[in-house]
Image (cartoon, rainbow, N blue to C red; front, top):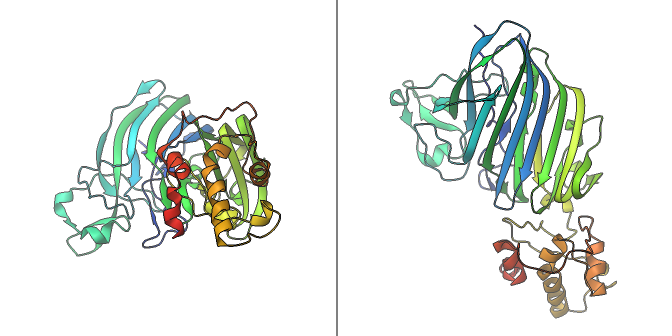
Length: 391
């Protein structure tokens, strides 16, 4: 019997991560087979929803075609250890930042167990055999929380580990439908209010070495989000807004280079391809670093306090007269960010002119000024708590 390993999470660290500039919680991954020549990925719809509470939800629907006989398959859900988060190592393999995981195969919800395994690498996927952690020593917490090494074997060699969720399912001959969902905490760091890494390249390990029909959907759920990804991952078709309010453009950023930039409010952006052979992995990053000083660090409803940098010529048509005028202007702009984020059309023509100069701004003449859906972050900005970052 061939064994297949479904590694849904883990593996990819933050693109700019270094010792102290961010916190990595967990990332997403395509289903990864260790060895499989009969089962092909004929369809995948990957939906990633970005929320205000610092979490993302992932919903993946697959159609897998088994070209051989019916088989029962051992599968596992692999999740990389957190990075820089200060969490204690769990010998039972329960990940602290994964919630509400569900997996169904052909309509049957699967039960699972958890454990500790040797971690996958880009070249070699884990065999997901649970380790007897009693046979290992645990390294000092300060050492392992910076990466995925928590154990030392009898020879004194460090072992890269991951947490894993185990389950078993039967794949019938022909079409099989797999659906899994989970919720996880987004990583963040310097110039990254949120970051969502997701491995796509393991799709090439299936029998057809591709995804025959692939759809990516990124949603901003009851919020507005401004983010980017890299176009070299998504060649061919263009991203397009399919629901709600949003804009997409491809442009060059001084900091990153060529990017696909997206602004959404209660909306969905989608990318679709046939015979998709991913050669590179995806990440979705908040827009902080690509703004190139246009409005300073990215304002996010969920986490980040803005550090304002204002181009006064866009507001007054001239430079500020003095420091007092500069601070007054920064205050006006920053206090109104939560309203501009929701599309408020300002009666103050100078404010309206300023926000219209920002690409991410999407006016909504029907939105009436209200704080009913304000987050703590929104109230902090309105109450000028952002000033602490300007001292």
